[in-house]
Image 1: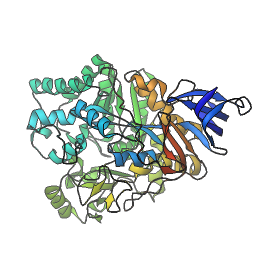
Image 2: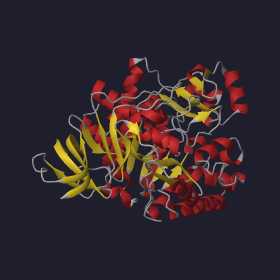
Image 3: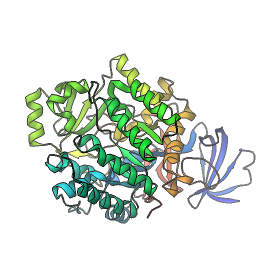
Image 4: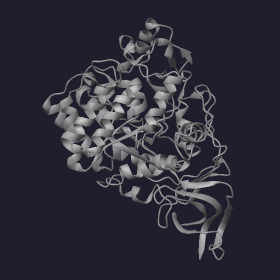
Length: 503
């Protein structure tokens, strides 16, 4: 037997079968073609032999929530062990154009999008045009389009029945073009109707597609608490039969995580199709013009203006007057929010309980890079020193391995692999055929692989320094090296478009 690449001596972890043994793994033509004990692999010949003694080999990580859909953003994620990064919460429109542009330009890792309810709603209610190519040929993401238009009046109002039909028709067109379900930024339009959200769920169920939702409510206080926001999604799942995914349950639940978790587990046990995700940071990120960051709303989140860092200048918001001014002059400006206090043990435990919820997958909510207040970092490497973003954009998965596995013991290494690769693939598998061969180490599975040192892998990024993670020795996408010996491979663009089965 001859293979393209042979990895010798790795501790192989397969979260599907539970395999945790030393094995030699052979890769050819983008697939895993052999898995043997070291002794049984003696007769295998290879074009390239890679000695990985003392390292762990696992399926590449599948990030269901990445807004960093640029060559630069995805390169950062590759160095964090990610081999597939999907923007499913915000999504995009027009779906076909975004896929076509990314395929033409090339990406280091696999990519994909949901169909964006936010952009469809802005288009119908405010006449916002669909994103069009910039001077460099890149197309603004749905998130950028949304941030730039979130203060328009129609976006935050009720839609008529006819307008809801128009919104759903546009979203369905996006799914037909390959969009992976429907992305719903519900928390940014809290005055949109519950009936509209339920109509989304019913349409998704009819199409056999999932819904990925930023919940409507983020608050520690009643009425309108984070529990209320979760219950709306649970109710939509129960009433429609749709598969409903709750995005970043850590930052939307705030300090109501125990109540939210109890409700979700009970609903899951009764057969409702509800899944969740979280990222391991007590700091969230959004645009400073977000509805829930209005000064009069901050007490509901349990924060003050000083808990908000305005990223374009790196300054803390001084007071309510300063916050109002920033919201008026730069509503699209990215900010970081200390929704929990990382130096307070009780708050750390709140964050950890987000991951104790059975089946919560790890997802980064990676954000675009900002330079001089603009989203103009698209295809540069290394990352410009004056470009900044939330550190989760570069370090979510290495932080999971460092903090949740090595330091706190919240996950075993195998459980971390389930949450980072196999479970995300399973959530998407029914609607995305490509996921059936990802997230596992098996003959015939895709050769999307990561090799890392579990003793040293770590995150290095901070709010002031978008430094890549370290400890990931090799990352392969479609059997080709994207990271080799800890370094990004220049010009490597094996990433493929991941589309729904409707395309």
